[in-house]
Image (tube, rainbow, N blue to C red; front, side, top):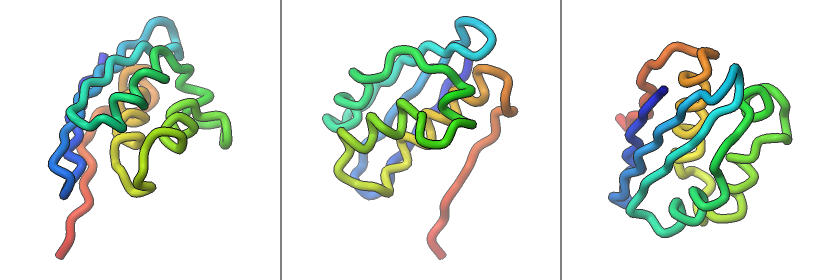
Length: 102
């Protein structure tokens, strides 16, 4: 299982994602957020296949649902969800990522 906390930045909303591997690549998602748009995104995502999400371009349920529900293309939540899926299924080690303004 992988748990991530995503601080989306200037909007002030945070999102918590729990991704739990159900089988080798199937992953159950639990997404909690204060953001009403991310809440709508979460409603569309219950379980995903990590291989489809991470390696089949154009097949990501996460990115498709984000495109339908999120008003800002630069929202970091979809990438945070994908990172949790990646770590929970053993396709990557859990490691923080950052974007810093200087």
